[in-house]
Image 1 (spheres, rainbow, N blue to C red):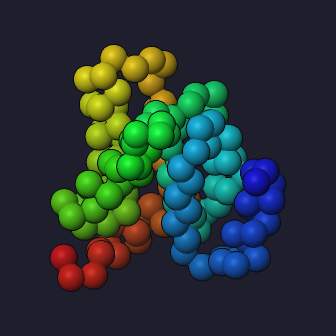
Image 2: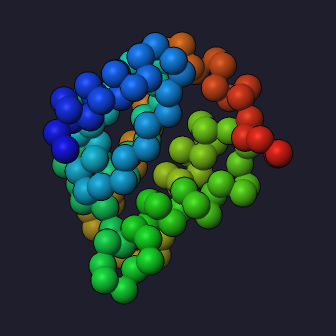
Length: 124
């Protein structure tokens, strides 16, 4: 899927509603400029010029996905989830001496920057 197609799809489905987009793929940072909007938060598994790790046959989840899932029970809102996933991926890559680091990306639109931290996950 091209970044332009993804942006069009999200635009059509979500319009101006507050939206969180999570993309887990190598080089997924390339989607950020296309998806970034004032009403959106975008999380990606890697920088535009980097692969992500953990996509092997023996892996249950790529590192980014596993870190998102591991972080969910410990955080209360999406910005914290993004930061926790970034930290988790970085620690795992350092421990395994994987280079270059994937450096997951997080983009927060101005409209969401103040309100999204107030919208906590249900039941927490």
